[in-house]
Amino acid sequence: MKKYECEPCGYIYDPELGDLDGGIEPGTPFEEIPDDWICPVCGVGKEEFRPVD
Image (tube, rainbow, N blue to C red; front, side, top):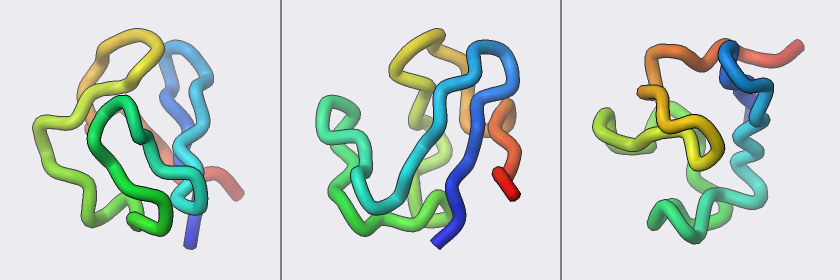
């Protein structure tokens, strides 16, 4: 599963860790996160994330 980076703040969403505070369980691919999820660091929407190589 790919990691995704928040372009404005640099937060990395790691699917192996999820975002428990945001209600995203570990093992959840980025593509399966609800569209209304926001970055836990800076609060921007999912559309501001890009895949990490």
